[in-house]
Length: 136
Image (cartoon, rainbow, N blue to C red):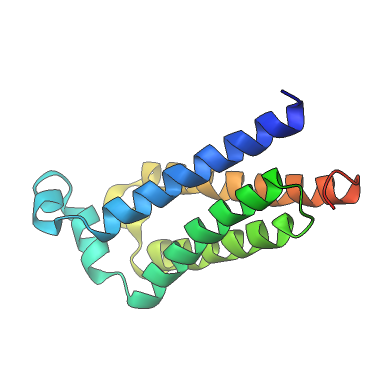
Protein backbone atom coordinates (compact mmCIF):
# COMPACT_ATOMS: atom_id res chain seq x y z
CA UNK A 1 0.00 0.00 0.00
CA UNK A 2 1.55 3.33 -1.00
CA UNK A 3 2.47 5.82 1.72
CA UNK A 4 -0.35 8.16 0.67
CA UNK A 5 -2.99 5.46 1.20
CA UNK A 6 -1.57 4.52 4.59
CA UNK A 7 -1.59 8.13 5.80
CA UNK A 8 -5.09 8.75 4.40
CA UNK A 9 -6.47 5.59 6.05
CA UNK A 10 -4.89 6.58 9.38
CA UNK A 11 -6.46 10.03 9.09
CA UNK A 12 -9.82 8.41 8.36
CA UNK A 13 -9.53 6.05 11.35
CA UNK A 14 -8.63 8.97 13.64
CA UNK A 15 -11.65 10.92 12.42
CA UNK A 16 -13.95 7.92 12.85
CA UNK A 17 -12.79 7.75 16.47
CA UNK A 18 -13.81 11.41 16.76
CA UNK A 19 -17.26 10.57 15.41
CA UNK A 20 -17.65 7.83 18.01
CA UNK A 21 -16.46 10.17 20.78
CA UNK A 22 -18.98 12.80 19.72
CA UNK A 23 -21.85 10.31 19.68
CA UNK A 24 -20.86 8.89 23.04
CA UNK A 25 -20.58 12.33 24.62
CA UNK A 26 -23.78 13.67 23.07
CA UNK A 27 -25.77 10.69 24.37
CA UNK A 28 -23.94 10.20 27.67
CA UNK A 29 -25.70 9.79 30.98
CA UNK A 30 -24.39 12.87 32.79
CA UNK A 31 -25.31 11.50 36.20
CA UNK A 32 -23.14 8.46 35.51
CA UNK A 33 -20.26 10.62 34.30
CA UNK A 34 -20.61 12.83 37.39
CA UNK A 35 -19.92 9.82 39.63
CA UNK A 36 -16.49 9.39 38.06
CA UNK A 37 -15.65 12.87 36.75
CA UNK A 38 -17.91 15.62 38.09
CA UNK A 39 -16.00 18.36 36.26
CA UNK A 40 -16.50 16.66 32.90
CA UNK A 41 -20.20 16.19 33.61
CA UNK A 42 -20.46 19.87 34.52
CA UNK A 43 -18.68 20.84 31.29
CA UNK A 44 -21.11 18.76 29.22
CA UNK A 45 -24.09 20.22 31.09
CA UNK A 46 -22.93 23.80 30.58
CA UNK A 47 -21.79 23.39 26.98
CA UNK A 48 -23.92 25.67 24.80
CA UNK A 49 -25.64 24.34 21.70
CA UNK A 50 -23.33 26.29 19.40
CA UNK A 51 -20.32 24.50 20.94
CA UNK A 52 -21.98 21.10 20.41
CA UNK A 53 -22.62 22.22 16.82
CA UNK A 54 -18.96 23.17 16.40
CA UNK A 55 -17.98 19.76 17.77
CA UNK A 56 -20.34 18.03 15.30
CA UNK A 57 -18.97 20.10 12.41
CA UNK A 58 -15.40 19.32 13.46
CA UNK A 59 -15.87 15.56 13.48
CA UNK A 60 -18.15 15.40 10.43
CA UNK A 61 -16.01 17.61 8.20
CA UNK A 62 -12.87 15.78 9.33
CA UNK A 63 -14.36 12.41 8.43
CA UNK A 64 -15.74 13.61 5.11
CA UNK A 65 -12.37 15.26 4.43
CA UNK A 66 -10.63 11.94 5.06
CA UNK A 67 -12.98 10.12 2.67
CA UNK A 68 -12.46 12.82 0.05
CA UNK A 69 -8.70 12.57 0.61
CA UNK A 70 -8.89 8.84 -0.09
CA UNK A 71 -10.81 9.70 -3.26
CA UNK A 72 -7.87 12.01 -4.15
CA UNK A 73 -9.99 15.14 -4.46
CA UNK A 74 -8.24 18.48 -4.10
CA UNK A 75 -10.91 20.02 -1.89
CA UNK A 76 -10.11 17.61 0.96
CA UNK A 77 -7.89 20.30 2.48
CA UNK A 78 -10.86 22.71 2.71
CA UNK A 79 -12.86 20.15 4.71
CA UNK A 80 -9.90 19.62 7.03
CA UNK A 81 -9.54 23.40 7.38
CA UNK A 82 -13.23 23.64 8.31
CA UNK A 83 -12.73 20.87 10.85
CA UNK A 84 -9.71 22.68 12.32
CA UNK A 85 -11.66 25.94 12.60
CA UNK A 86 -14.52 24.13 14.34
CA UNK A 87 -12.05 22.48 16.73
CA UNK A 88 -10.76 25.95 17.67
CA UNK A 89 -14.32 27.15 18.31
CA UNK A 90 -15.10 24.10 20.43
CA UNK A 91 -11.93 24.25 22.49
CA UNK A 92 -12.11 28.03 22.66
CA UNK A 93 -15.21 27.64 24.80
CA UNK A 94 -13.72 24.73 26.75
CA UNK A 95 -10.58 26.64 27.69
CA UNK A 96 -11.73 30.26 27.77
CA UNK A 97 -15.32 30.13 28.98
CA UNK A 98 -15.43 26.92 30.98
CA UNK A 99 -11.72 27.11 31.95
CA UNK A 100 -11.13 23.37 32.07
CA UNK A 101 -7.47 23.87 33.02
CA UNK A 102 -8.42 25.69 36.22
CA UNK A 103 -10.94 22.97 37.01
CA UNK A 104 -8.82 19.91 36.16
CA UNK A 105 -5.24 21.09 35.91
CA UNK A 106 -2.79 21.50 33.02
CA UNK A 107 -3.04 17.86 31.96
CA UNK A 108 -6.56 18.64 30.72
CA UNK A 109 -4.94 20.43 27.78
CA UNK A 110 -2.96 17.43 26.52
CA UNK A 111 -5.60 15.55 24.54
CA UNK A 112 -7.11 18.71 23.03
CA UNK A 113 -3.59 19.71 21.98
CA UNK A 114 -3.23 16.34 20.24
CA UNK A 115 -6.57 16.86 18.48
CA UNK A 116 -5.54 20.33 17.26
CA UNK A 117 -2.15 19.01 16.14
CA UNK A 118 -3.68 16.17 14.11
CA UNK A 119 -6.33 18.47 12.60
CA UNK A 120 -3.62 20.94 11.57
CA UNK A 121 -1.39 18.17 10.23
CA UNK A 122 -4.28 16.71 8.21
CA UNK A 123 -4.99 20.12 6.68
CA UNK A 124 -1.33 20.69 5.81
CA UNK A 125 -0.95 17.17 4.42
CA UNK A 126 -3.98 17.51 2.15
CA UNK A 127 -2.86 20.97 1.01
CA UNK A 128 0.60 19.62 0.15
CA UNK A 129 -0.88 16.66 -1.70
CA UNK A 130 -3.01 19.09 -3.69
CA UNK A 131 0.07 21.19 -4.48
CA UNK A 132 2.14 18.18 -5.63
CA UNK A 133 -0.64 16.92 -7.92
CA UNK A 134 -1.63 13.84 -5.91
CA UNK A 135 -5.12 15.29 -5.48
CA UNK A 136 -7.13 16.29 -8.53
